[in-house]
Length: 339
Image (tube, rainbow, N blue to C red; front, side):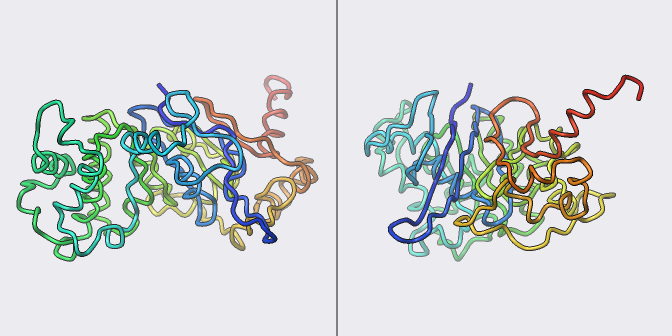
């Protein structure tokens, strides 16, 4: 069952005389209950803006966010209830945790805001709810951390405290923004294992925002690859990463250290300015298939440079937004059998 969904979502910044930046420029994305979806792309691709819009922290310029199949109610009361169900885990625990608050107060903050102790069906006290959240995040025994401050914790412990603060709300979905980017390799594995365990034990859905395809491979059921405000390839993780179709996905995958046997593909330049999105396929200025003549040989280079692509639909299959891939599929379908 789909829990959270974006349909044709657009997020824009600027205006009033300044150029409008199309940070998210028409995106369909869904996360089901108990599912882990990885949203992958370079810095500047629009991942964080999309995540903020899904959390109700940005008002879309177009399209909408749907919760349980209904448009998100943006009244203050409805948003408060929504944010109990959908919780954000930030990427920088050192900056996200108030250095003057103890671990107990950091985790208890949401419990107090929503008066959860008074609503708890098991009649647990605030301290018991804090302890349960810390235990769920793998910090045991929890009581020994109650009076400690962030600077007294390791990076992994701080990240788990952030996760505990989210779990204290008993959410149905976590949005984790680069959840392990600041951690050592040994600790990264522990935090990823924790997210997988939470999915199994609590049925949590998780949207992981990351630039790391290796992380996505280890944790996600489905993957959406984002470039300059659009999803350019999406589908089951195993299919997308074992048989990447879009030149951008291939380039990202080629530099994942855990994957052997792939020749690194160097993308020249950076993600373009979202106030000046290129005509045609927005990836064409950096596309290796355009640069090396593959697109011209396939007869699609004019389309790459001038014909916009449709928004990639949400399906359960492997979908790609690329003129070259579309042409290759047509060519394969019309080739004589046995050729």
